[in-house]
Length: 272
Image (cartoon, rainbow, N blue to C red; front, top):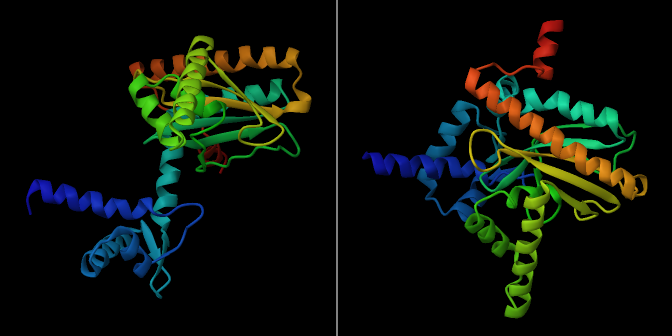
């Protein structure tokens, strides 16, 4: 097998994991063949590799789910993820200062993934557990990420959500979004009212590592009824400042090679 064909086979194998989603967590081998278009012998060979490694699990009747190796890897990620290790006490600080829910979000492969959240509300309206993908076409988090991407990349993502027709509506949508992103970039934060969850105001700012593009974002959400203009002004100062403190710490940790700290799983291990 040549290097090119080996790489292609690996991509095809890993693509199987991408079809598992929150709305479709179980798949039959027949449905996989239909969606992926792989010949049956090829698919079964890939499924054997993935089940033997624990990445997938089978119930013995041709139904597959994600496997226990995923949980094991999440445990290791919690031990090593600097974004969560450094950002967790900052998130906790926001929930102590405001009646809110705060999120740390990772940006990867054109996706927004909730990595950690805290709340000081008894019944929060917005709740994203660790691992849930967040919307890319609306909300403060999406805009604060898009505003700090290279303009060509951001425009391509915007165009993917624009209406196909009529052409005037498509152009107007793109122009409106691009203009909004310029303002977000100037301000250093994005604010949204009820775009993702009705009755909720969200404020988000980007988090950077060494790369020019953001590694993620910090977001804080509050009930609109509990967030008058005066409080909005405070949140639009607090969130950018908190996000910047995470950025500074991430870059310092990268330069010094400092290990992640303040991870909940480490604290649990120390207390055992």
